[in-house]
Image (cartoon, rainbow, N blue to C red; front, top):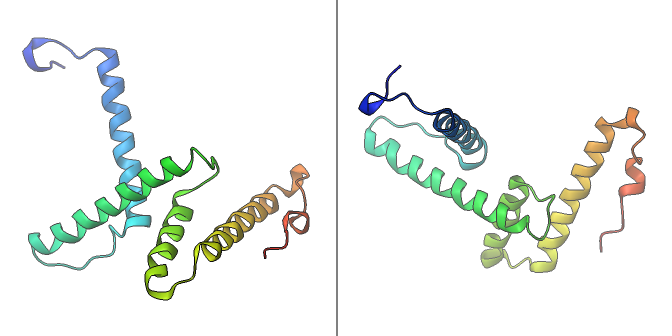
Amino acid sequence: MEARGGKEPSLGELARVSKAGACMEASCKRGKGEGGLAAYQVRTWQGWHHPMALSLLAVWVLVRETHRGQKLTPALTLPQVRDGLSLLLLEVYCTPGIDDICRQVQRQVLRNESARCHHQRPRKCLPSCKLRREIP
């Protein structure tokens, strides 16, 4: 296998390309689930291009905000960021307030922790009733 210029690529270059391919595949999967890449019905190139560009932009924003939020809350997930941003955007129209958004995110985190412990029950996790706290 010869590359441009008659040289074979180095092992480091092959590893870099392989990792980039895996990252692109993971981004596409995330885009299908979180950004709506799979939710379109079009017949023309322009009709396809517009929703794909917007979906990829949405996924990019979600990933970026997730990484930014994980500096303060390491257990933060992309779906939690998506839900939080959607609640924040709804605040403009419904005015739920920042306290309502925090309560919603806290409920989601407790629900995720309860599910995790339920699946790891044989490992003697805390029962889900001990995880629940009063949410004001």
